[in-house]
Amino acid sequence: MLDFVVVFTKGGVVLWHSAASGGSFASCINSLIRGVILEERSTEAKYFEEDHLAVQFKLDNELDLVYAAIFQKVIKLNYLDGFLADMQAAFKDKFGGIPAAERLGNEYDFDREYRRVLSAAEEASAKQVKAPKAMRSYNESQKSKKTVASMIQDDKKPPAEKRVNIQESPPPSKSQPSSPPANGATMDDIIRENRRKLREKLTPTKKTSPGDSRPSKAAASEKAGKKPRVWDLGGNSKDAVMLDRSKDTPEDVQYQNINSELVGTMQGVIRDLDVESEDEAEDEEQSSSEEEEQLVQSKKNKRGGLLSYFKGIVGAKTMTLADLQPALEKMRDHLISKNVATEIAAKLCDSVATSLDGKQMGTFDSIASQVKEALTQSLVRILSPKRRIDIIRDALESKRNGRPYTIIFCGVNGVGKSTNLAKICFWLIENDFNVLIAACDTFRAGAVEQLRTHTRHLNALHPAAKHDGRTMVQLYEKGYGKDAAGIAMEAIKFAHDTRVDVVLVDTAGRMQDNEPLMRSLSKLIKVNNPDLVLFVGEALVGNEAVDQLVKFNQSLADYSSNENPHIIDGIVLTKFDTIDDKVGAAISMTYITGQPIVFVGTGQTYADLKAINVNAVVNSLMK
Ligand code: GDP
Image 1 (cartoon, helix red, strand yellow):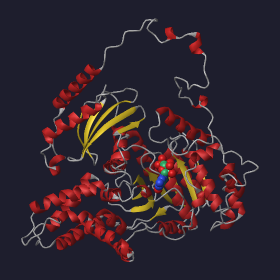
Image 2 (cartoon, rainbow, N blue to C red):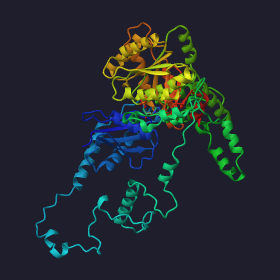
Image 3 (cartoon, rainbow, N blue to C red):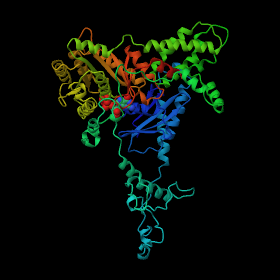
Image 4 (spheres, rainbow, N blue to C red):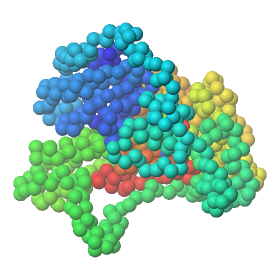
């Protein structure tokens, strides 16, 4: 039985859904959107699983819609292909004429059609199911035909039925080819070949025979070992020993998210994200050899990205909104495809439309440059901080005043709060601040251990001996289940009493709709009055970013009894390394909060922390 059926835009806006048969399917659909649809993963199977649920879906590229059916993973529904195709046809019949721009504000009354399509699909499938076969009598069975002679195995003859069991398959022979079986190979050949490959993978590499002068790969790497890394800071063998993972407890290994061996140095201000400017790209193209010229030329012709949508608008009259509308719609979809939240993409298009309306039309180039200018202005306005957050300057100021500078990190689960807190800690230590990490995620099992591991690694990179005997990072922890606000308060007091420069407060991940947890975050912030509240959000989110930030800010305001509640001061945008050119979350997040992106997480080492580069983001969006 189907649990839930939903029709949504590729940007993630739900247009219609069936009544849910109990349970929540939002998380599964969100994962599908985030993990498959937005990332445009290869989805030939059009099938997705999460926990006990499975989703089969169908993409409608004409209307840019997704039809998804959710069911329990254990159930096999053989009518889904037909059902989803019929859903698509029925939905298109009824709503296909609605222009994309009006699609979101519309009422999608589709219940009746849905019931019709579903029952037709179920009926058709029921007809296909054959009546169960009557049981065979003993005389009719294969068993009755067996004689004692037929049961004696003849080794020379291939067994009539081969069991698919790795353990029982014949040992691999060296003469077996490593290439896939040639055309015409039987299923058994393929299975045997696959088994052999699997066994090769599973069995440890054989020791080289005495006659074989070539050492095996494993033996060679064992012998050579990994060269001890010379650290830029504290680069001595002692550090190398402390970083030796072989001495880690299983607990350490489990929570080790950062590969300390890839850490660089990060003194001074954080470096900007790398950008490949258009000029650089052009230079590269010019320097390419003559053979590549044609390719480059065709690339140039194709280029134009977002601006190419305005190609059709040329002429001598003045532009009207009607002239611009089709191009603006494409531009909106382009921004959504870059992960800008739908609502914000629409607002950006409105602002471009407003600035172009009534202007003189001209050649494509003149329109393109006007669009570019209007959009760039809007984007730069959004991304440019209303106020500058200078943590180093402010932390120094606090230090002079004899009090620790405090930052609280908040956000939903798994976005990289602890990891990026550790990166920021590393950056602070490199700038000679000592840090106290307050382990206030007293909820998620392993959260405290994760911070303990980071603390150990950070101290290994910056041993006290290199800092006039000062321990550069300490962990303030009180285990699990305790009041987070109280632990943060004690930690700040401890830092104050022991003259620690900066306190970084890790908090439990929470969903923006979880009222009790949002209340407790608001309390934690209110009673501890930090210098900075940073919202940690991952760059992978599209429309979800809006919901998270609006609700976090709203809750911090609503549940604080202060007249001037402390809401989000800035953003840590994580996992930027995983999004390619889908940089839209940066726009959405700053648009909603009006606060700057203070740090960008670009990987899993301590040095993977950058400052936002407005031009880089704007260029990426234009492409
Ligand atoms: P938390 O639950 O919010 O504290 O999240 P964690 O700090 O435990 O991070 C969740 C996962 O995201 C871990 O596997 C991290 O290594 C990973 N992660 C965090 N930041 C980044 C980043 O900037 N880039 C990438 N690729 N992964 C990251």
